[in-house]
Amino acid sequence: MIAVYSSFIKNKLFIDGDWCSSADEKTFAVMNPATGELIAQVADATPADATRAINAAARAQITWAEKTASERSRLLRCWFDLVMQNQESLAQLLTLEQGKPLAEARGEIAYGASYIEWFAEEAKRIYGDVIPPLANNQRILVTKQPVGVVATITPWNFPNAMLARKLAPALAAGCTVIAKPAAETPLSALALAQLALEAGIPAGVINIVPSSQAQAIGEVFTSNILVRKLSFTGSTAVGKKLIAQCAADVKRITLELGGNAPFIVFEDADLDAAVTGAIASKFRNAGQTCVCANRFYIHQSIYDAFCQKLTAAMQTLKLGNGFTDEVTIGPLISLRAKEKVQSFVDDAVQRGARIAYQAAIQTPFQTSAAESFAQGNFFPPALLVDVPQDARLVCEEIFGPVAGLIRFATEEQVIQLANASEYGLAAYVYTRDANRIKRLSEQLQTGMLGINTGLLSNAAAPFGGIKQSGWGREGSRYGLDDYLNIKYLCEAFS
Ligand code: NAP
Image (cartoon, rainbow, N blue to C red; front, side, top):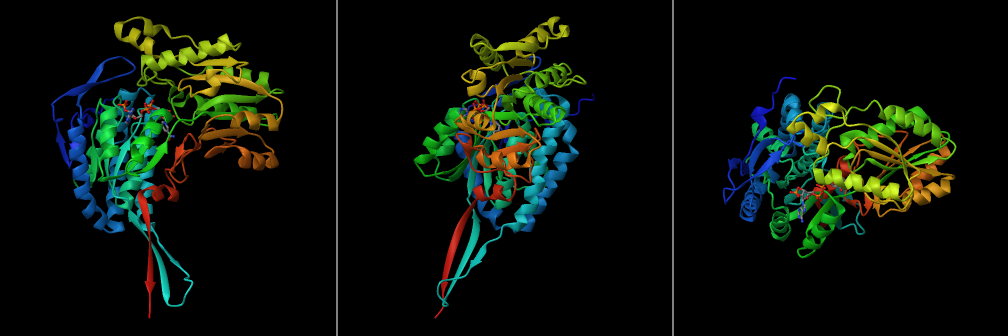
């Protein structure tokens, strides 16, 4: 691999079109989770910097909203083109700070860019309505207006795509943005801003304030009256705090929160397809995605066969540094994350589950200081069988490469088990029975359902959850709604 990312390492705040230091000149370290090496010291935004960014976004919003939809569309399209032209550099940067295999990182860049492309097109289709009035001397019109200044807070697991999925509809709608990326992975966000600048997106429309003080920046975002909306992707626990903070000003809020996806395989399923889907859904990004299969419900008549096939497929996974060819599972984001996943495995085993398979850590990791750090962050993919329904592996989001299998006997039973969660983001079902698909489509309590597929996210579809998995949708034509206010005009004629 030829390293091409270096020109994309930006280590300043991006406010009002300028790269600047933080008010107190402090920085924080961004580390490579695969090696423990320092990548960059990045300017550490203070609350005063966040306020400055909000003021810049508020000034820019007036002229950005005055542009025609076509003008905004062309700028977004130009940004999309630049992102795709620089896909390899952005992917390398992503692997460097987040750890995912380079092939997956390339996929994330294309996936994030697809939202920019999609909303470049949707920008031109923000239609209103003309509604038949109740009296002949009236006309009822409905128009859509941008919400205004939007603050975003995004996680480290998809540092490019989670931000692109918010920036693109916000800009298409005529909003401007102040973004706080995760402290672990600010570089991908700053690189996106650099390309937006090159694309000609005006100063102040996008502002990025990386910070190690998440709570303090969140308080500025939620308490500043100029911010009309917060869009958050992250854990349900932090989402609940932000809802409470937004309540004071009745600030609009979109929440993409945690998940606990059931993956259900019925006796009539194509088992090979189910295993392929299970690998894609469970082990992508080392199991660190919100829509990852989190609990596998397998019909008792095919349980052993599925277990055998899944074990064989897991044996082909290759754990290692995401820059190494053929690696399919990178490190977890931190040692703390690894310890959490291990504690879930220990809890399940104590409750009666059995480890049917776990990959070994490959020997190269045991040879140098950097590699022993890597061994610390890597979690070998594991398969647990006979996991009880009350295990933490089943009740909580794992965020690691561990699959836990549970037997079920009837459709009614598995629907009840699948719905017994406070989360409702995604679910997956494998069956060939069309009537059963109809019943499950109606009865499973999630915002998204994969039917005979383990991958379901794309820009054309509304992504989002119900219950404690969130409010609002990202992507598709519905993805614009969260960035628009509806205005009703009542016109009277004499
Ligand atoms: P997290 O701890 O909630 O952090 C997410 C973001 O919130 C980060 O930028 C973090 O900053 C910031 N943050 C933390 N505490 C805050 C506070 N008190 N006020 C304001 N901001 C705060 O979540 P995570 O562990 O990084 O991410 C994983 C979670 O995200 C999982 O639950 C996953 O399911 C969810 N997720 C959901 C979706 C979806 O679309 N539904 C997509 C991806 C991920 P720092 O990094 O600086 O702490």
